[in-house]
Structures are given as C-alpha cells and as structure tokens.
Length: 422
Ligand code: GAP
Image 1 (cartoon, rainbow, N blue to C red):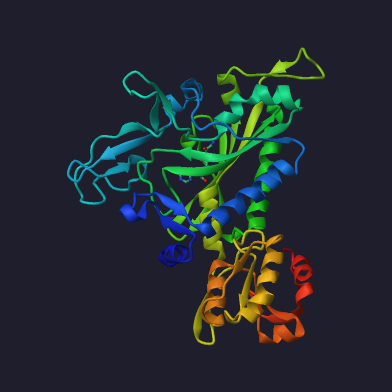
Image 2: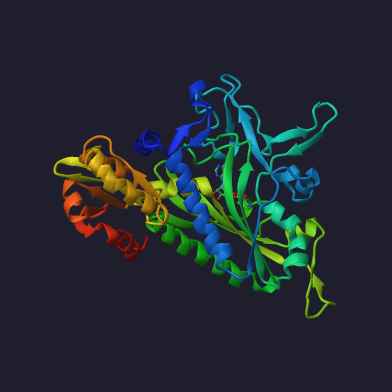
C-alpha cells in the first residue's frame, strides 16, 4: 500500500488534500492522471448502463435536497453508527468495529455507545439561527426515487426500467481512513431498477452477473473479488437482501460495491406509484434492485489490480497494467531528443494522434527513464521518434507489457493503434 500511495503521489494520480496548509485528514485531491482515470471509469459505466441500454435513463440530481426526503427515506431516524469515545485520549471509534473493550490507542476506558447520524448537516440562508437545516446527500439514490414520476411522465417507460446516476455523496464517517477507501466525500455510480415484486430474484441475479462482468471488463482482478451475503442483522434499513462485493485490498478484505433488493421501501415512503399503461386500473408500487458502486473504491481496486513489479536486466520495473480503455494515457510520443528537427516529426504526429487517443508528449531525460515513467502510469504504447525517422518516415512503437518494439511508417500509426483495440 505504501508503494502504491508513493507512486500515486509521485506520478500525479492522488495528492493529499490542502497539502500546502498541512493537509486535512482523509481528504484527497486527484491529480491529472487520477482525474482522467476517474473519468474513464465513469464514462465506461455510463456507456454500459445508460447509453447502450434502452431500459435505462440517466439523471443528475441536486446534492442538497428538501430535508423531508431524508425523513421519508429513513436516513434521519436510522442512518446511524454506534460511536464510543475513549475517556482518556478522547479518540473515537465505531463500537461495531472494535474487538476489545478498551481503547485500541491507549487502553483507556471507553464510553457507552451512542448512535451518531452520518449525514452532514448544514444551513440554507445567511444566518444559521433562523436558516433552514439541510443535509448533504449521503447517497445519490434518493434523487432517482423522488424523480420517479418525472421520468414516467417524460420518458413513458414500461416496467422493468431503471435510472442511473453518478455523483458525490457525503458521510460524516467516525473512522475514515485507508487512503481513498473511506472518506467523508466520495462519488457513487448508482442504479435504481424498478420491477414487478415477483421478479426480484431474476433481476437480482442479472445485475449480479452484470457487476461481475463489468469488474472483469474494466480490469479488476476478479480473483481478489468475493461475494458476501450480508447477514440479516447487518442489512441497511431499506434492504431485504444485500450482496457486498468485497475486494482483497492490501489492508484487508473490504466492501467494494453493493447490490441490494430495496423492495418498495423508498417509493412507498415517498408515496409514489406506477400505473400499468396497458391496464390503467392496475396501480401498484414497483420494487427496486439497486446495484451501487463507489468511484473511489473502484479506482483503488483498479490501481491494486494493475500494480505489477518485475525484474528486467536486474532492475525493478513497476508497471500499472491498466486495460487500454482505463489507462489515463493510451499513447506516449517520445522524441529521442529535444532537437528541433525531431520535433518537426514528433509534434505533428502528437497533434494528429491527440484527436483520437489520450496522448502524452515527453522529451525530457533519457529514453530509458521515460519508458519507466510511462510504465509506471500504465501507458500501453510508447512511440519513439529517432534520427532515422527523418530519413525513412518510420517510428518505433513499444508495447507496455511485452516491451516488444516494432517499426512502422508514420502514416500507418493511427490504423495500427486502432487495430490494437484503442
Ligand atoms: N444507495 C446505497 C448505498 O449508498 P452503501 O453500501 O452505503 O449503499 C454504496 O454505499 C457504495 O459507496 C459502497 O459500496 C462504496 O463503494 C461506496 N462508499 C460508501 N461509503 C463510502 C466512503 N465513506 N468512502 C468511499 N466510498 C464509499
């Protein structure tokens, strides 16, 4: 984990939040590479679950909603964690995560557990005394439930159909930590799939299959992925059945994604129902299957899955073996030197490839060091422009994983990259 965190900082994936002011606990900023990787995850998800399906509708709801939403959803009364505090060092812990009766930090006596609501509360209005309290959403899901009628009236879908949303969620976690695994703000990719009650098992199985297939497609190491049937006593207040997809992170096996059968809990509480367009006398409350995936945990699982080290000529080579779709840069253009005559060839090639591929141009340091840098950020193809290129109009293309090199005419490069699946 330490090596991964160091690499992510050094290569521009993830920086500590507010670093020049000493940082802020559990806050992280995504640098150029991390921001692109997040974008690639979200784009792949949106393409798969919205763009390529006729039964799914996208949504981008507000983060701050009417507080009545959170009363109806049960979050005001039940979205709690049990908090205990050390009477000696005042450190706080989640009672359900402790294995001892004493403070794990100083062995001091712990207070009795009290319920702590995870929602961040804030105020709308300039003076907090007379302003209305509101919450930062703890899940994106509710925006989809409260827009159920709007989708029916504008898109006229037939059951089964679903809604999908990507957006930030906020939780005042008692014990955030493990890098970007548990943070106070994070992003979710959520689906609410509306169904007839008696079909829930089939849809649950279908979405489970989808999640496993998608994990493999984006490059998550599925040998590290495990299903956990969440015991009845630990189910969220809205769920009748939940499967957690757990992942073997370097700090242990932890929840990556979740799949829940939310029944008609939410639509019923928001007093929303559905009229069968074929039989308008048939009015009922649809049930819901909810596949939910955190963007940040997905990114961390991708980094862990992609991270490889190997020995090449007695030297350590670190490679992030991202898929071609996920790699922040797909192609690096590396002129052998900064000489203007080489730039005359490498710059037009770079400008041309930029239109189609995510490209990086690097002419600093030795070619060996530049290959190493591109391996460490997971760039699948490096193109070297050398002095020979000036005569024969050819370049060298190096493939990341095999390190094999081929020589190709410049005007064939784009077609070649397409043929490789870029
Ligand atoms: N709408 C259902 C829901 O929010 P959840 O299991 O509480 O379910 C869904 O959260 C996903 O959001 C998790 O599987 C995880 O990927 C991500 N997630 C939850 N809390 C998080 C946190 N504090 N930091 C980062 N990601 C988090």
